[in-house]
Each structure stands twice: as C-alpha cells, then as structure tokens.
Length: 502
Image (cartoon, rainbow, N blue to C red; front, side):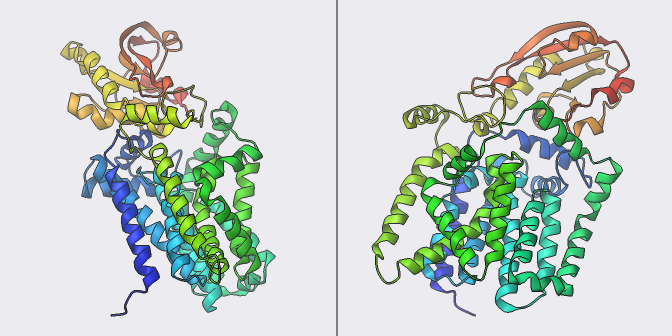
C-alpha cells in the first residue's frame, strides 16, 4: 500500500477536525427553514421544483430514510461535504505544485471560512455547491498537468450534476469558457473529449431541463418576482467586496488575492479568469455576497503555494504567525457563523463584538442574525396551530384546511404536525402551490403567516384564534393564527389564482 505523504496526512487530520466541529454543533438551536422545505420536497420527488433543481430533494430523501429526521441525521451529509471540501482543497494545492505547508494551509483556510461553517451546517444546496465546483476545477488542473483530454468528460459529468444541484454552476462554467478562450488552453476546444463532456453535462441535466420546459420555466418567473419585489438586499460593488472580507474571514483576504495573482502569473490562468468572471458577474447582477463563496477554495490553494514559495528561503517564522492569527480570528468569528454558544450567550457576545445582525433580505431588524433566527419558532408555531385545530369539534376538524403563506411554515407543520395530530398543510408558496389544496373546499381554514387584511376579503368570517411570537424568530414570523370560515369560492376552483412565487 502506498504511504500517505506528510501533506496528505495533515490535510486529512484537518478534514476530520472540520467534520468533528460541524457535527458538534449540528444539534444546536433548531431546524432551518429551508431544511423544512426540502424535507417536504423529498416527500414529493420530482425532476424539478419551482425554486431549485431536484438533487437536494433526492439527497434529503436519502438522508431521512437512512439516518432519520433528527438534526444529526439531517446534517451528517452536509458535514461530510464540508470535510471533503477541505480534503479536495489540499489536493488542489498539491496538484498545482504545493508542498506540505501549502497543502496544509489551503486545507486550514477552507476550514476557517465563516460562510462555509454556516452553509455546511444545514441540509441545503449550498453545502454541496463548493465541492462540485472544486471537483470541476480539479479536472481542469489535471487536464492541464497531464495533457489527458479525458478529464473534460469528468468535468462535464460534474457540471451536469452541479446543474441538478444549483443553477449557479453555470456561472463557473462560463468563467471556465472565458478562461479557455483568453489563454492558450483554448487548444482544448478542438478536443472531442471537451464536447463529449459537454454532451454528458447536457444529458445529466436533461431531466430537469425537460421538467422546466413542461412547466414554462417557473424558476425564471420566480427570479423575476423576487427582483420586482425588492426582497433581497442588493449591495454595491464596494460593500460587496467588503462583505467578502468578512464572510470569507478577513485574515484570508491577502491569501485569496495573492492566489488570484499567482494563478494569472502561471500556467493555470484559466482558473484566474474563472474567478474574475464569477466575482464580476455576481456584482453586476446584484447577487448575494455568499454566491461567490464556492469559487474561493482554488484561490486559497494557489495563495498557499505563493505564501509557501515566498517564505521558503527566509521569513519562515511568518508561517507560524499567520496560522496563529488565522486561528485566533476564526475562534472570534466562529460563534457568529455557527451555533457554538447558547442563544443568550451569543446575544451578549454579539453585543461585545459591536456587531449588528446584517440584513440579507428585507424582513426587518431581528435580535439574531437571519441565519440563526430562521432556526427558531417552528415547533412553537406547530403547537399553537394544533391548539387551535384541536379546539374544533371533530366533524369540523375533518374538513379544516391548514393554509400557510410561506413554504417554511407549511414545512414546519408537515415536520412537527404528526406529533400534534395535524393533517398535512397546504400553501400557495413555491412548490407547495403545485401540490394543490387536495380535497379542501375552503369552508374552514386555519391560516398562518398573514395579518388578516387580505384574508378578510375572501372569507365571510375571520377571527384571531392564536398567536405566534417566538422571541428569537424573525420578526416577520410573528403573526396571528387565523380561524376563517366560508371562503367566498370553492378553494379547489380558486386555487390557480392563489399562486405566490417570491
């Protein structure tokens, strides 16, 4: 058996440490709003959904059937994806010529990124996205290093899988295309394996593409609605770049800058162009600051090589200083990225740091950052809805629909509902709209996520029967539970008009 090199052993140790950290905090706080939705989607497996490709629903189905629906069972695969990204980043550094220190620093850099700690805490598309992007980058590097065109087939396969995970991989592929055209690596465009790989990508993506065509591209309609609503906070170029310093760890700023320069100066210019294209497009298109996160590991690997080269002959002491400072700053930022501290302790820590919860979407100011606030209040909501539902006479309960204005509310009731004797929820939001109102006619409806203003137009009687106001939940998730009677039209006929994609 071939012995592992010192660099590989260190990288594996860092990857294991990353896995242990993610699993240690996996059970803190509560279930995330998008996880509730993906569990619901996994119970309605299809080749597409309004707001995402099908892979996350399939992964969630696998996780819940094999590991269960506990937080640990749900979050094991994202944690493993995070550890695999650490290992792959070390491998990228080695493939580009990095020695033991460069491989270790590249792996450590990925481990110390706050946004990765957050994304790999949940069962979401974002947990797997960086791993797929860097798998593609590794194929490009191997093709350049070995001259073996077969790596473009694997690049295509990973691209197709990436499209089934999240459409944003198209930006990475566009960056690669620009890089190929702008450098001498354009020679690969004449290789049949490049085009066989492209065909493989299309073939893997084809089931979702057919679904999109058959449903008139609902994802594009959703994106138009989001932009028109002004829901997302759009950052200007300067603020966007400043955000990168924070979410990627400010100590790593010089590393990924140096890495980008190193890539431009060497034989891997195609990757430098890719980074520049992705970064620029996200600014121009008004993307959220974390949309660039999946592309960074390759710049960390390149930056680690540059740092190793600069400190090999002299100033080797700066290596230890840099690592020590990186670890210290990471320890300061970790509670802000992952649920390391109890909530009250975190609130005090946040105040001590002098940080205000950043506004990612226009939902108002919350005591907790949105990524934490979205883990609170779900079971309390289910309990309150169950109290209202179970207060009804049995003959009324049998025909009472529970309607939610947001997929997260519906997902929470479907997740916790069986525990409290609730039927499955219905909703007009995102893919829940496709799943319809079932056999409910609207004669009795419990409504969540509304202030009651619009509901009074559609029901003959509306009364406030309960209230949801968990102190740590997002402020827009403090709302009354409405008991509504006698919809003015049959819900089954009225349903197409209720669609709410935003």
